[in-house]
Length: 167
Image (cartoon, rainbow, N blue to C red; front, side, top):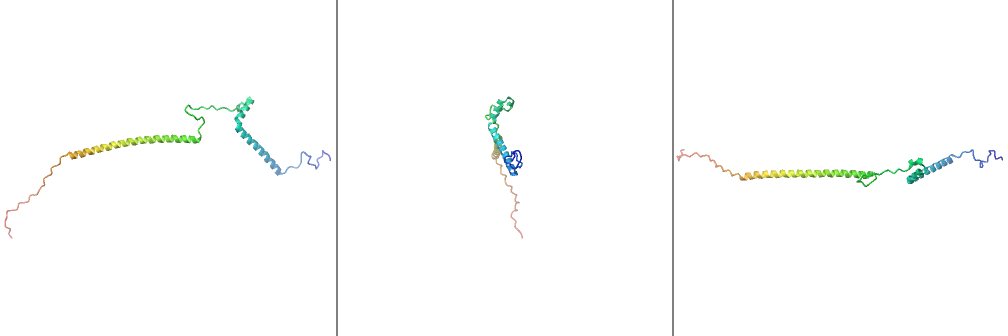
């Protein structure tokens, strides 16, 4: 046999004319996809873990890529606060509830003051009414008793002197 001829010996042929079956092609495609997916997932995890350090190394090695260097965000805290991070939603809710409770407490205190003032006014009015009532009672007890009027009797007509009663 001639090596240059394309014969039936396909084992030595680098370019076989027969295509692999669909199943083999699907397996190869799936394997390629899984390899690419795993490389991407690993790169993502590595970047999350070492991203800032990697950015620093890239920026130091090439001045054109210095924009990749991690930028330190200036943290400015107001003088009276301790926390430098923004509060979480739970902390914000707690803070809002606390402010609401403070407002309610102030309103309750105002109502208590108004109630106490109302009670004091009512007590003063009751005291005045009792004093006026006592004055009336005193005036009644001081008045002289009225003289009793003499009973008036109808005069009985005088009966004539004894006269014989005739029948």
